[in-house]
Length: 403
Image 1 (tube, rainbow, N blue to C red):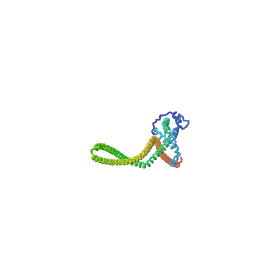
Image 2 (tube, rainbow, N blue to C red; image 1 turned 180 degrees about the vertical axis):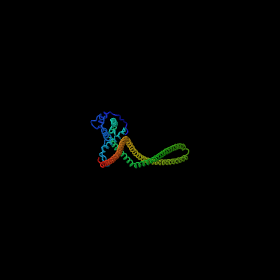
Image 3 (tube, helix red, strand yellow; image 1 turned 135 degrees about the vertical axis):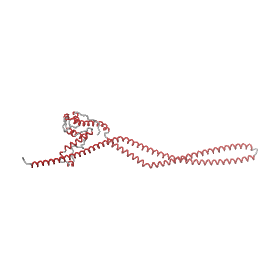
Image 4 (cartoon, helix red, strand yellow; image 1 turned 90 degrees about the horizontal axis):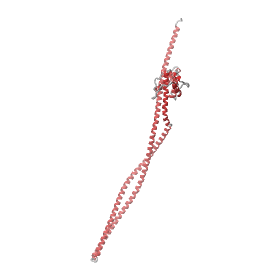
């Protein structure tokens, strides 16, 4: 145990007051004089109370616990060793605790027959440790008040996390189920887009053809009208000439009239041919117009499909926003989860230290049992030898002549 406190010597009055305050006094009428002039049982009683209330409140390491049957069987008279074992247990635990707070050198003599100066040093170390522990607990109180119901809060957060994870899984499952439909719609949309591009190209070509036909139609009309005007002017001029010549030459006039009739017939034929050409081009333009209407209907269908793509994109954006919100909430939960994990790690470390201490105590107890067994065996051998010696002495006394 790493500590950052000191243990300055206290006065007997301060020690007596602190022992009463913390409930460690062996008797209710303990006074400063009892510490200045200690009895042999004072320090064992105080240390027993300290270990029972501060170090091991649960009573896991009971100093008065009974030995196991195997240990009892290894001793000849186990009732003679119970008090000694209890004292050795108390010394071992007290020494281990004092060493953990950087107060080494606690001997068995210090426990059973301490001088007043050494007693004050040991009790001062224990009381200063209690002061130090109270200061640290006071510093931890704000953190404890900050998380009054940490376990309940963790359970709530885990439940919310499970709900969010379930919602994410449901959304992912729905997205996976809708993915074939979305892919089919995307394929149809791409096909329609391709058709739309082709239709737009055809529409542009038809418009260009219609414009060219209109231009040719206007040009033809313009040429026909210009030609007709020219022919009328020419005929008017010829009529005026014929009128001037009608008196002079009737035969020439008749011949000129026949030529004019022939030219007029040719002109009508040309006009008829031009009219037929215009009618054919008009019929072609109507066909193009019908094709344009069909393309417009296809374009309307394509726009409706594009609106469906926009709806699907909006749903995907909502799903992405929900995923972002869940990720943000998970990030908010991470610091609290780390605090809980740190608290659990500290508790695990403390449990490991306690287990290690118990293991060391068990090993030390086994060594003590072995030593006591050796001592008992040696005492038995000594007793047998001494008994044999007494018998030999008695025999010698009985064999020697009386004075």
